[in-house]
Image 1 (cartoon, helix red, strand yellow):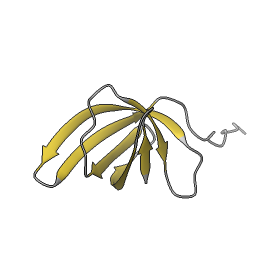
Image 2: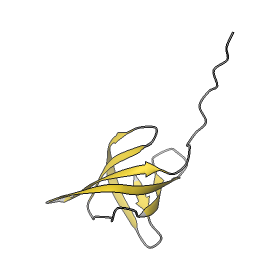
Image 3: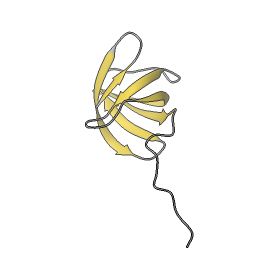
Length: 79
């Protein structure tokens, strides 16, 4: 996966994903509040924001929240 800000792209590894966001390992740190584009393999890019950062000796773990509603979900019909 890749995170792109206005001035750089950062590759990373997804630790977990949910409807609302991701937890990602990256080699370089990004500041909380940074808005970016999230590129996941095989999916359309999505806007996101760094919500928290945990610095580690070999990089950072960051929380990313999605700023859109993502792919539409199937509607439920009541029969």
